[in-house]
Image (cartoon, rainbow, N blue to C red):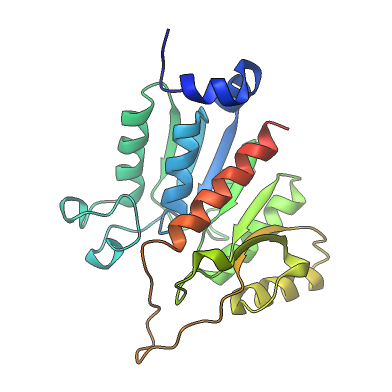
Length: 227
């Protein structure tokens, strides 16, 4: 019988496809990068997903976030992402949290929850570092997205351990934090492209850089889970 994962099974085989169906991935941050991570993981057949984001859709999100359209402006991001995921896979278990991840909310995710993988697509540096630290302490595989704003060339995106990153200012901050806190391994997706300057203090973005980073992250998660 044909299902939405039929073509995936042809590529991966039944055992690995079932492994994805039984896996649980948590994605923190459902923006330009994170929304594409969720989209790809759901379509790949990951059966259990947790999504965390406090934000609502803004008109300025439309240029880069898969859940952002004029009809979703003002709506809660995790609610839209959850509805979309269920529309793709009605059998998915998806847990949405419309909250900001920080010291006050970390217990909701790290007290008794067990994830096969964590995706860090958080913008807030403080929250990002906290998530990295907790994932490391709890021995949960994590992949962390570095800065994808003010970039225009997706060909400059690479997968690397944080210790081998360069150019990216956010990666520099994370690299120092990991070194200072004896975090010896962190898989990252980052861009070696120099940031493009603009006349504003705001960060510029485009449709095909954060999305590519999100799809690369999803591919790394899937490949690691089915090893």
